[in-house]
Length: 253
Image (cartoon, rainbow, N blue to C red; front, side, top):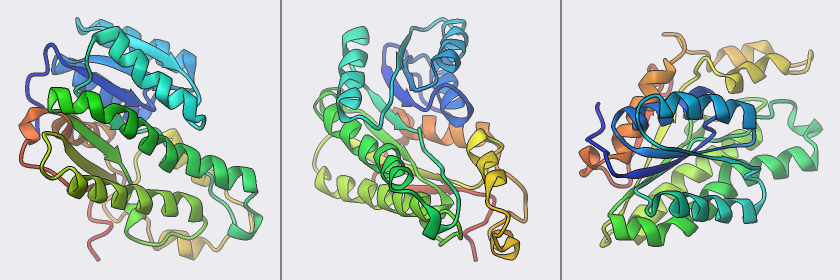
């Protein structure tokens, strides 16, 4: 899957300091899009921005905490202010706090919901007027965890299932408008997010974790980024309300 030519268009990518967010931003930049890069990690954003600009397009950096509603609103405003338009919103950022459910703090639960579910909605809500003007697209990165319960990741599973269904609900609401809503559900990738599983408490049941270990191994970050960028572009004009699994078959059975 290859995105269409996005020269003259602008995309907003969250989680862009590293991993899938960075790979998505670079894929969009290679297609010609100017990119607003959003993450709480300022140093990582600067590194991504350097790579994006080296591809001959513009990069705008927003180092901010998306758990705060006002920051989400300001991010969209900053994107439109920098580029004069918005053609694609890619919600890639996510928080992953694995552990025993009975030990999860209120702060961890609320922060996970804020970053993984509320932030995408607020960004979408703020972006819709701009995306309607450009006949643009929203791509939400969910997870294979949206379709199968996974031990020790209750907040993450809940938010990714919610984000998946949010995508479909928005697709129905805007069925007769020139805007597209789609999602990508990756399996495990070699990212810092997946590495968080190494921090599980010593008393976890390893056999439960092995139940959702991918038999074909981890998914390549670039493969997922290619799908996100494709759905963000006009090349995916026939996709609306879809959730594409890129998980090496982990949810097949």
